[in-house]
Length: 414
Image 1 (cartoon, rainbow, N blue to C red):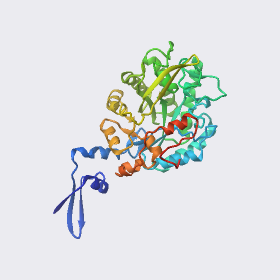
Image 2: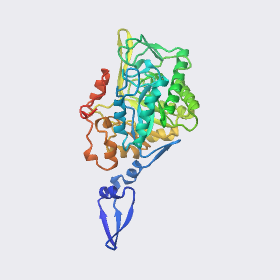
Image 3: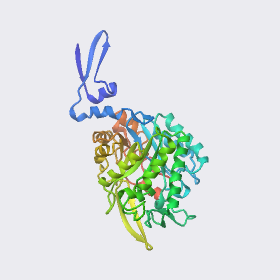
C-alpha cells in the first residue's frame, strides 16, 4: 500500500476533519495520512467548525457576527429592506448572528435610524429579519438595549435617565433615574424580549456594555448612587440582575439569554476584570446562559457647560494592539461557569484560532464583516488570502457619530 503525505492545508480542504482516509483508484488502495505539525492549529481548526449548543439553540460553527450599528432603520425604529440586505449577506456561513441593538423605548436609541422593539407593530419586520438570517443557516439572536445618557440627542427630549448626572455623549443632559423610572426600564426590557421571541429569534442578548444604560449602572465611574442601585459591585449590578431575572421568567427556562459585559474599562476608576468577574457570577445566577465579553478601550471624563461627560470607545484603532478580551476568556469561563464570546479584531483564521486556543467558545468578527461580508466563508474554507481586510480606519464610526448611515472606505456596496 502506497502512503502519500499531503500538505496539511490542502488535505484539510479535501477531508476537513478526517485524520485518515482510504481511496481506491484503478484497483490500487491508497492511504492518505495527514501530517500536521504542532504549529498548524489542526485540533483547534476542527473546533472552529464544530456546532455549539446554547439551551435550545444549536449553531453550526464558532463564528459570530456581533451587533453592528448600521443606522439603516426607519425613523420609527422599523426594519427596512436595506437592513434585510445587510444581514442576509453577512449570515452566510456564520454560526450566529446577533442583530444590532434594538431599543426598548424610543428615547433609548443609539442612533436616529436605530431599530426598536418597543411596540407590537415592530414585530412583523423583525420576523422577516429573523427568518432571513435563519434561512441562510445562522442562529438568529437580537440585542436589546436602552442607551440611557448615551442615546442620540433627539431635539424632542430634554433629558435622559442615567444612574447619576454624568452623560456619556455630548449634547445629552443626564438625570438620575427615579425608582419608578427604573421599574419602567425593567418592564421595557421584558416586553422587548417577549417581542423578540414572538418574532422568531432564537435568543436575546441584553446589552450591558459600552457605557449604555445598564453599563452606566455597572460602572463605578458613572454610577454614584447611594441607594440599592448603587454603591458596591452588587448594588451597581442590581438593575442588570433584576432585568435578567425578569426576562428569564417571561421567556421560560429554555430560551437562550446572552449578556454583553465590559470585562475591562481602560479608564481611571473603571471596571476591572476582578469586578467584572463578580458581576458575571451574579448574572449567571440570575439566568444568563452566555457572556459576550467586551470592553471600553479608552475614554475621557470632561466637563461641557458645567456638566460631566464621559466619552468612550469600544473599538481598537489601527495602531493599537487588541487581545485584552481574548486573554480573559478562560478565566471568565472557569469562574463564572458560562461559555463566552470574545471580540477584538479577530477577522482572520489565525486570530480566530488563537481565541479558541485561549479558551473562547465563540469568536466574534465585527468590522471585518462590514468590509468583507464573505469573511466567515473565506476563513472556514481556508481562503484567508482572499479576504478584503479591514483597515481599522474608523470611517464606519465616523459616519455613525454624525447620524449618517453606515459606510465603509473599503466596501462601496453598502
